[in-house]
Amino acid sequence: MAQGIPDKIMSNTTLIKDLADVAKDAALLQGVLMRIHETPNSSELVTYAPFTLFPTPVPKAVFFQALAVQTHYNTLVDKISQDPDFLEEALASTIAVDDFTARLFRIHQQILKEGRSQSIVLGLNRSDYMLDQGDDGSSSLKQIEINTFAASFGGLSSRTPDVHRHVLKVAGQLEESRRILDNNPAAGLAKAVAKAWELYGSERAVVMFLVEEGQRNIFDQRYIENELWKRNISTMRKRFDDVTKTGSLDQDKRLFVDDQEVAVVYFRNGYMPENYISEKTWDARLLMERSLAVKCPDISTHLAGTKKVQQVLASPGVLEKFFPDQPQIVEQIRATFAGLYTLDMGPEGEKTVAMALAAPDRFVLKPQREGGGNNIYGSEICQVLQGVKESTERMAYILMDKIHPNPVQNYLLRRDGPLKISNCLSELGVFGTYVRQGKDMVMNECVGHLLRTKSSEHSDGGVAAGVAVLDNPLLV
Image (cartoon, rainbow, N blue to C red; front, side, top):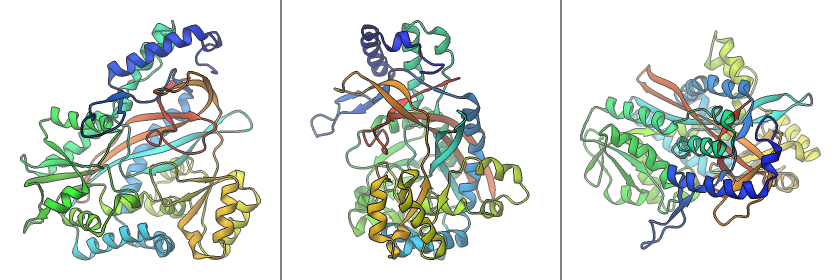
């Protein structure tokens, strides 16, 4: 690992085995946990969440570049969510062919028609990047996507620095242990939720985590819940089914679920089509959107995080509309863009199709989906595009330049997984929070980071998808 862990440690199999045992115990002690499985009689069974044995070297310059631009991304997402004309124009082709995005957009239109019930907006975002390796050996920061919905691992990434510090100390790498930064996204995310709850103005109202039925990643959410309880803010965990059965609005559009007034709905579920199992589920989403509760995200912010919006933002002159007379901010944001290309019908889309078919290994084909494991690579791009290139179905996708990070060697620690060295690629996420009340931005902060690492044999997929593992940047 260049400028990271010495080769003599990496190749010492006896030491590595001992350090792996130390690391797993440290992860359990620090609470870097996931549920093994969840059944009525065994929900208490847990293990350590998968993570790297050693932290991964990350250049200081690009790391701090990612942190510095986050508040501008927060502002950009918020401005997009307030611009219904832009959203309608940007998503017009997508909603014509993608039913899931179209359903979300219809809720957005209904809320606009009725008038937004709540002027408080809460954003908990995570912007994800990889480091593109240039021919000259330099690394440049390139954005993969921005997550405006259920941006995860703020909780567990708050616990991992101490794990790697401990491992490095045991390995005799005291100086390296000092290069791992403190990181507490859970506290920062909770601080923003608490501000929204405070502005809502009812001490008896609760923060409702809208969650799925079986949750392996529950501890990630619990850390944020616990931070809220420290502030004497009550929380509850409910599913779509609970909202369907017991949710209601009073005459002031206050939301009640199980007779509890809800100040903030924090969506940790609802970003994939399969989350909406019936029309009643869609009705529950609409009920929450119509309510006085602060939504994180609200429907327009959900749409602002779509892949199609990401692609449109990369078009010439678009960022300038959101940051007039602020060329430095435009430059900071645009510097992180990878090449993004439309697949809309027409000459520009035809050019994109031809470009992708001619050199599929240069690109990634992205549908309008979140959650990891959805992107299309290599020869599969040709298979998909050959099938839809003459059809409007292609408008459900965007094309993006493939980013080429520099692989490093590390050990990926998974429950029951073999202890072997792997060539690894990493993805840096930066957490941002904002709270707006009316036209006033009350809070806009960068609150921490996340590093996820996977074997280079895998093209796509995150920690929750079982491909990537948690990591820490070792600044070099």
